[in-house]
Image (cartoon, rainbow, N blue to C red; front, side, top):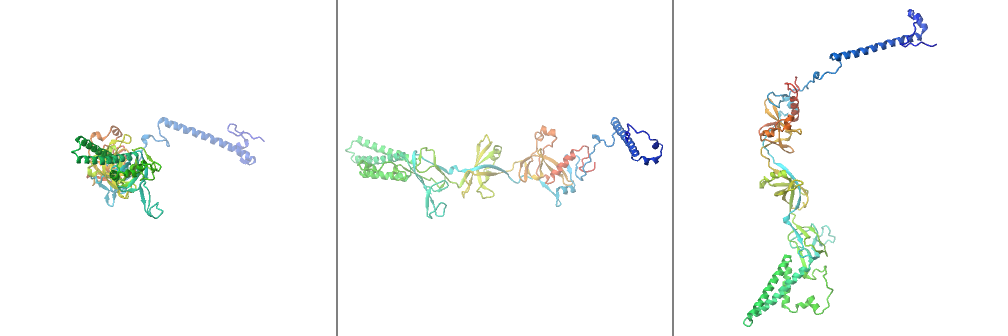
Length: 547
């Protein structure tokens, strides 16, 4: 059977049995009657909901037009009130700018009062020096360094000086004293042989001296003979012979001076003198030499110099010796090498029991260093090998006048003792100079200062009875690990505030004088509280109290 549509737009036809109020027949109709009843109830509920929504929209619109704030609407800005935080105690002091009154419970909570005493520091003049640390390196002392060079180049290296290696030392394998060539790091004593060289120029100069000595002996002998018979010898001939003697003397001086300039050992020069005497006394002495035997026709060995036989031709031999006790720090030759350049350092010998220290000082610190008195120009040097905790003490000898245009630093030089020779040349060093404190400053604990990147402030106790503390902006001149220097000299008006700082409403600078009392703890919290109170509108500035 097809049922009729029961929607609100198409209501079902009236049933005469149901409309008449006779319910006895409902049971006979069953589910069909209940279905029609539920459809009518749904239609009524939908109509009522639509009417409620329309009414709500009208009420909101009327409230907006008439300016009536309905429940649930956002409050206006002028109606917003934020209750201040309820913290007991800290309040601004009237007629005293930037001053707080801090009662005892708050001082205890902030750590200002401990053990029944307030943590107050009395400002005083500086008690410690200002450390200035410079960085640099060590170097050999130029006054204790000698460069061994060849004055007689070209020359050939015949032999290198020897260094003994005693039993038990590294490198000794035979158990007896062994010898090896000198090398950097070896210690030498004054007069020790550094090397033996063969030079044609030296041989020629030795021959010049020998020739002058032999000729002088002959001419002097002739002059003595003529002088003994001066009555029979014409005076002109005697004067001519005397002129030869004088020329021989000049030749001896010239040849001898050349050898001395080349630092030829005196014993080698003495040997030339002895050889000249032998030649002068024995007419046949020359024929015993290699050259004399060759002139007589004797067959000689192959000509040439054998470097392995240093005494084969003593005339060209040159021996270089150490000028003083020290260590060899450089060696640049080997056996059989030909030295052509006289400017090359064959050896360098240094006394390393004292070293030069070269540090770099910023140019803005130079006026401070120049103002130091002679007894204050000392430094403590820290480097590898210095076992002293306080460093090696030394004297500042020189403050350079030339500024490095790239680093804007000047060279500072001084010396340190190196008795155990543990410190080497070229090591990194840090040099600490204790600079006396400047004038017009006071010393305060670093914990008593609060810095926020803009300025530094301290809290000065202006009334110890009422526990009033005034925030003061100060100028820090130097900062250290536990203390700081604060300016105590009054500020001029031009130094107080810049135009930008005035625009920002910053505090003016004020001096901190000796004898004033400042807080050591709780400074950061009090600063935050003071700024919070001073930033509130109205006259009531109590921090956390009832408005």
